[in-house]
Amino acid sequence: MVWDVCSWRDMGPLIHLETTLTGDRYLSVLYDHLHSFMSIVHSDGLGQFQQDNATPQASRVATKWLQQHSSDFRHFHWPPKSPEMNIIEDIRDALLHAVEKRSLPPRTPMDLFTALQDSWCEFPPGYLQTKVESMSRRFASLMRPRGGPTRY
Figure 1 (tube, helix red, strand yellow):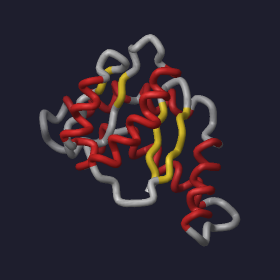
Figure 2 (cartoon, rainbow, N blue to C red; figure 1 turned 120 degrees about the vertical axis):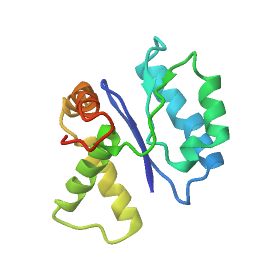
Figure 3 (cartoon, rainbow, N blue to C red; figure 1 turned 30 degrees about the vertical axis):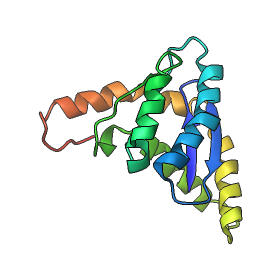
Figure 4 (cartoon, rainbow, N blue to C red; figure 1 turned 90 degrees about the vertical axis):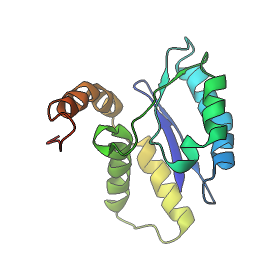
């Protein structure tokens, strides 16, 4: 399993998680990696953090930590079960597709992580900006059906 962080401005680290993610393990990822990324990329405190609401991310310890660091960056409260709005899923799909296109498929978990890291670093300039800028279109497509299915 991997954890990643990125913003409109920059790609952050791709972190290898060796065990199942729990609330406490997620808290250490936030502390060790998110805070430093946000303080560098969004030193003005205006950065917004979005996550996909997996159970560890919605845990009490993670929620409390995010509230305690609300002066460093904003946490965008994400509606549950809303993958059509989530650019994180698009980014992960593109990452997996890039790994699948490699001439030598990964044979071990470490090979896979290396291929993921290499592909992560090879995303073209502007890729993230395009994804972030698609958010207004995604929101508009959700508002039109008033709770029904979207055609996004």
